[in-house]
Image (cartoon, rainbow, N blue to C red):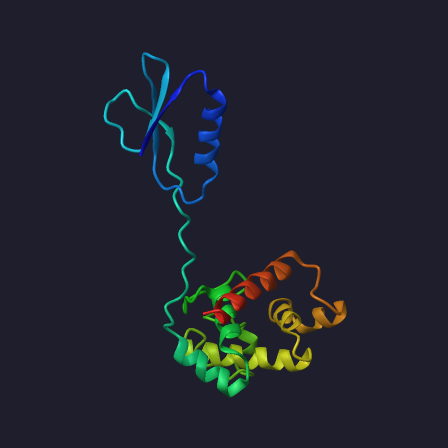
Length: 196
């Protein structure tokens, strides 16, 4: 692609520049040079060193990587046993550990579902780094929270992060930035996984 333009036609030049900048599907570097007659020359395939880079290629943003489904078997099993939807469980695992079974938080939560040590016995977890045990335990706890908050997903998620007592005292998502961000992130992935 190439085009030429007289120097006197500055309005048209502005239009061309604006077009190159605004069109989101443009994926090529644009080069320009002004020849001896004052004509602006544009191309995406320069044929001489006189051409200088005018607009750098706008590279498309890589799509967000969605986990491969490595733990789908355990997530499906936990969903059936504890009545928590697969997309919601998957979203919690994504946000809690980014599907890393060896994840450990600063507070000491471990595994895919980031279970705290004081909850291992209650949730029948012997090895928090075992993917199946972590998912089953996390699904059980999330199911209990959903029951406690009458199926309100956002409140159950807030309770998973900040503790159920804080949520009950607030009567809403507690005004804690980490918890508010946590719920937003999970709801985003929840919608994403539901749409797959």
